Length: 182
Image (cartoon, rainbow, N blue to C red; front, side, top):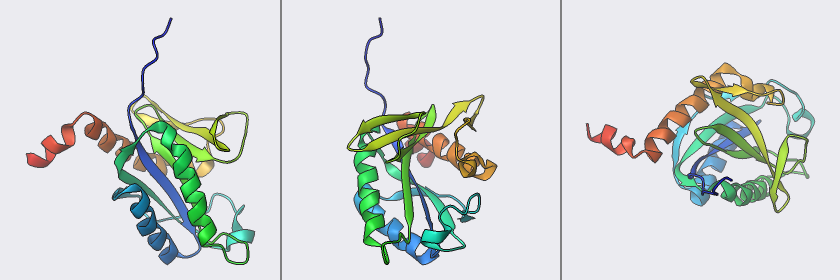
């Protein structure tokens, strides 16, 4: 028999992409108002693994991944996704999104994204939101799964999430304050 235990808090992350780099920066400031200050940003990237969003948003699409300093409870990702949806809606023009915000979290074992779309590998959480297991940590690095979006399987993106995991690991173990004082 297993004994239920509460999981550790997790590191909130977001993927943002838009045809307008300035809008990404503006929305990050808005998200900081909701979720606290950023801890890190990925290199600026092009969202070029698919043209799925071109008709709605235009082209080219600029992308940035961010990680927030404050940790969250894993189940809080539902409300984070609903907040992100609200921010996306605020910036619609003629019914089309101008920015896409995909929140998720990093734990020691995995990267999970929040989505409103059901699929075979997604687990329902609540309020119309599903958890998408996107990357798992194996043999010293995050690794993609059969269903992982190609852009999340990119070595640059995986490298960024490995860095986020390292900072998160130090944070939950209380080691980051030690490192700052040395």
